[in-house]
Image (cartoon, rainbow, N blue to C red; front, side):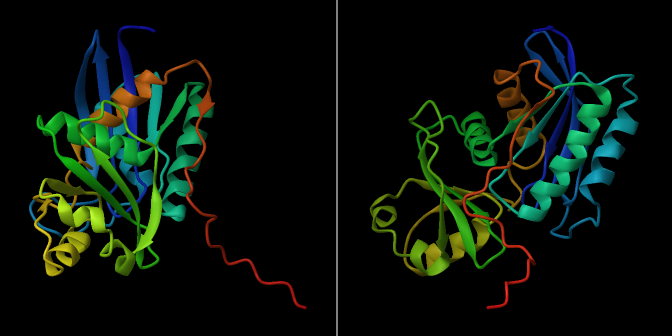
Length: 240
């Protein structure tokens, strides 16, 4: 692999979307352009589509060429996965560069390992936008992400017995605040992210790029959406 690369990173599977341009020089990654649909100063969302986020960071970076695109594939919002992936595929085909997909839960796990240099257990929870969450229980003792992701409604999530015997739990993901409040109301002592969008900003994008580089090859399109269940569509039911 070429030591010096310009990489576009796209993270858009749930409530929080971000995009950035990285320069890979040797083994180091440097963020040169960044934007997101959330505000660090308050909880108000910026009304920016993923296409405008991507176009903005590309224009501001003033790079003459991009060598590779890394993107999160889900699980998450079907609409957001579809729109961001369609835009990225069109860009990759037009530029004739590799598009490498990364599981969004694996990205959260990797980013958390970079921040917390201690052995904690993770509850990864992302909104399904259907009054339930994508859920995965992970331990930072493990070197690699254990690829087990389930869908649980909030009532069932509060009944997971193993969580109530562990006082060393940290909750991350775009549904972390709601889940934290539910678990706390049930008497469980847990930790939560300082901001609900933790791990979706620069540290999240950097983790995404590192994982994409591990899967780097010369295929133009090396990604398929990660769906835990079939997406809900507006397809009309057949008349009986």
